Length: 249
Image (cartoon, rainbow, N blue to C red; front, side, top):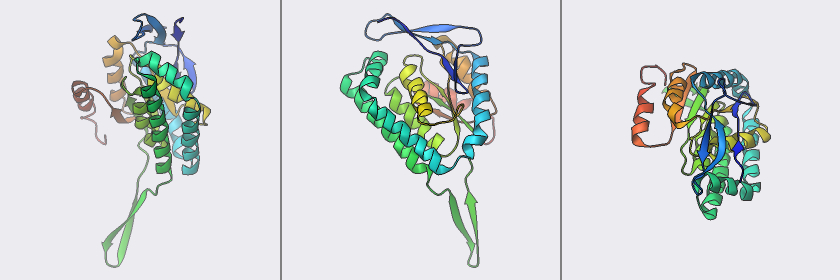
């Protein structure tokens, strides 16, 4: 199979990195290059945050029914394309066919679960005294960065972004360099086809060597209000320490 190539997804547009750098993904079965992806740096990460921040007010103001519909449409598309997507998942991760199809079904289920949460009431009535009550209402946080691993990559990505999108936040996915297509780019494409506005989901891929600097730039950006992470304990501790000095995170 000839090598494939991809782009960053920023503001609804596919693009190369500012410096034009790329990295090659080695097929886990063949050990040869089968995919070329952009190797983003800190400047590319900031551009993706720009796009997510710009899209946030519009998506936050979008009605819950419309957000739910987008997620349900995306879940349907995933299931309709199970056979083709399973082939890509196996190529990226060397998993079995049954495992790949199981992951796709789980990912569709995560999107449906997020859709169900979109219309859930977000206000609470609090009784302060026998004759007086007050209510509290939750607001969207803003830009959320999702760091996705390679194992179970599609379902972990869906889990990381489904509820985030359902409640009106925007997302920047940083897929693992070991499976960048199945752990970010495919879901972003499916969501766009399902009706998600441009910039609500952005995807930034990078080389293994650039990962620490790219993640540092993302977490350090004051516009990033939440971070979701699935991965090893050591990396999780590093990710957890980065936003500690910032209030409200």
